[in-house]
Length: 128
Image (cartoon, rainbow, N blue to C red; front, top):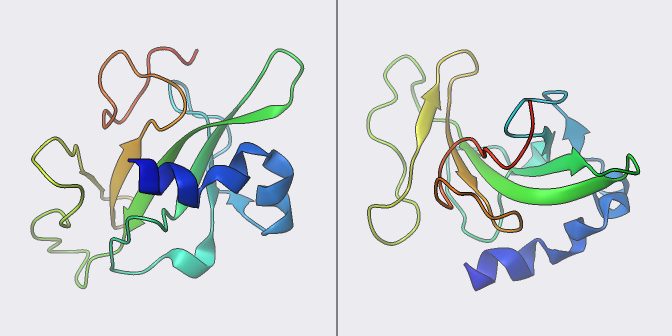
């Protein structure tokens, strides 16, 4: 987990996401936040230190704060995605196949603690 946190540390400053041209692909999603995508990283490969998405929520002042990362992996055949990608060591990963956009997704709550677990897709600590 330390490698993921170190590789995304610059994004704790929201301006870094703006400067790197990450785009909000979701708007605000309850219990998740805003999904800022780096289109250059979207492919069929899980790379530990290159999550495709950074999640942000607005704080009390309206400033965006990083809360998590998300991996978004496009399978070779989205109609038959097969098994989830090999992710983190162990069997704790909670990959979800999003049929609407044809990709495997894995949320990792690297910044904001998640009462339901670090890999749970949603975080009840984030409001509706």
